[in-house]
Length: 507
Image 1 (cartoon, rainbow, N blue to C red):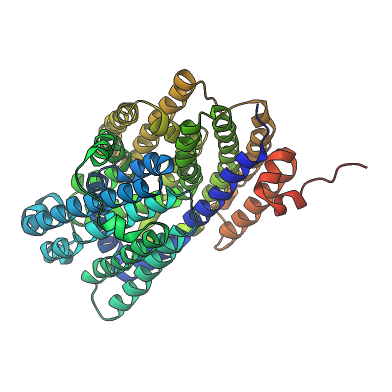
Image 2: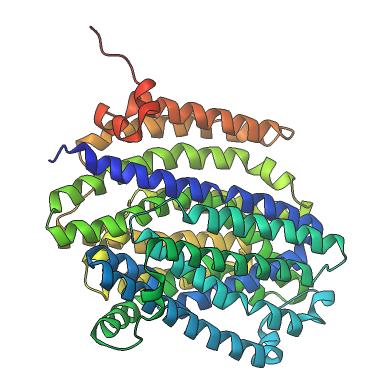
């Protein structure tokens, strides 16, 4: 096995930036709390439902160009990289703008498929006509920041996707609510924030590419055709991935009438947002591994890829176990910050967190299959997971509502993840679990078990005891994993801080 520490440092360094960005989603967590109090659970639920529809449509309008960029840019020369980025941006903007125009025209008909509270229902057509224009701007953000990641630069998108877009949305929503726009305000705030994020994403593209060449990139030609062929083949898989996250919100809204449907979507959205903190760990490594896998495949350095795959997986599991346990311990305090109705999300949080921990155990295998495998494999895996989710959802959601939706979503996600892990082993001989994984994962599992032992007593704790205890035990657990779980090489790749808290060798 290769011992080149540079491979681990690239994974750890890139993952550090990406994870910081994902943890910046704590701003979104604060936003959710503010939105539920300012606009109420029903209007917030309607916002959650429409945002889910926009994200699903984005998975179509971007035509998998976010993944295509990770595949094409690392192998391209300077001139070709500009063409790749330009074609991706133009195609996404064109398709998403057409969808936005169609949504504006069809808004009165679309209201028949969306349940809302009585006050919101009267304004639903106008709300759709306003909010549908988030689609082209968000598509631009997705593709623009993907173009930056494809340059193996993982930090700059943090400001755009999190601190500017999320922060401005929160500030704008508070201002609009204070002026009395208690239906339109939330949707206008998001439109404003995404528009600014799109502008800033394009500025980042201009810093990393020749913007003139990007704007002149042809929409037709051999390279454009190859990109579209690759992107369209992956688009169903990307759409299904998005449906995993958003379908439960949409289904709950469609199934339950009126305000109940809108509110249920909001309850599930809150549970998903809490659990997504664990998902961030796996996505962090997938974002980093995707362009690196394409690069190493291009140079034929399969050993380096295997090392990075194994390292990313054992770090992912080692962090996810105590992190997930701490979230379950903190869930009562998190929900206590919202209106009392959101207690309906208690069980769903635990289920989704557990599902995300199990998914983290498969490592960035989905990214490996997307970059190295046959272009139909991600679609096949995603369809299998989606069918599992739909079947379980149809069985459980009518009776168990939000809890049933959580069980269905967790099951479907893991069907896809397990298939990707199996295929990585069979097709490419890449399996992330080696003897080096035993100590960190065992240490992490024991610490997570200790945290979970506190959960039964946490139901009687008054806020903020739960969230304070969760933060304390999580920090302690991570430090103990680094000190006693990681080997010297793994710790060194994390940087000077990790080395400092390691046991000193005996002289």
